[in-house]
Image (cartoon, rainbow, N blue to C red; front, side, top):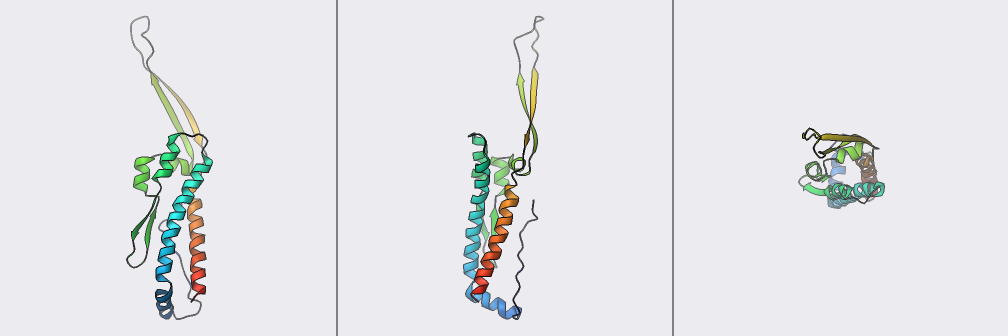
Length: 161
């Protein structure tokens, strides 16, 4: 998984950095913040789409994961701080989120107690089977796409300065 938080480096194209910052603040700062919030929402939706497109069954399990992925504006003071895929919510509502993202093996167990044996004793049995999940890497894919979109937006807005 990518290191978080995401950082973007912008060059000032030969302008004095303090002059460039003033121009950015004056012309595009709020527009860029608004677009970043939109990109956060689009990224959350993209993660949901990746999960939905890989669904093999119509069970509710993956719907819980999709529904747990949100985008939230956490702060807009001195920049924009957006949370995508609230981990606490994902763990609470879909604790298998990391297995779906990273892949791996999980074991299902079934406990059952048959009728009593001839000696009158009850015995409990446990059956298990393992399943391998191929990684979806929905976090990585969406993160890479988000980085690309941010760079494109910055380049577009920089062209306006």
